[in-house]
Image (tube, rainbow, N blue to C red):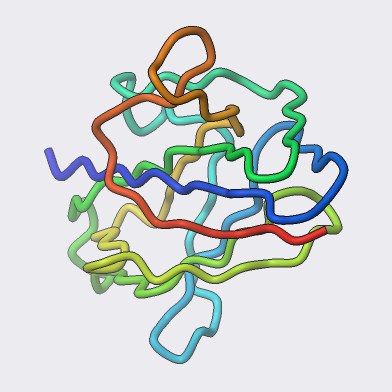
Length: 147
């Protein structure tokens, strides 16, 4: 099936409160860090129903708290006339107007010919599980936000 998933964790390192609401801005980047022709979907359902999306909602982080999203894609070749897309880097903008961070996941993002990635909305990380806890089972890359 070629399903891939990766958890991104944002840890707030500033003072005061850092606010997130909704989905991060994502941009797949090539070896030269130039943007690739890849669509980013808000939500994961068009790619898989196996990674639930909490939907957009306000998330407030205090210093040293974290929020996560899960990015999903498929390494599927549906169109052999187009070469497979491989994105070694992913630019992440946590919220409108926030500075972008670039992550380099192990193995990159191997999209095949699907040309799309999906993301869940931000969710506050709560160690130990429970309501609003991040879901296990996805590999991770990390990013930090400064005030």
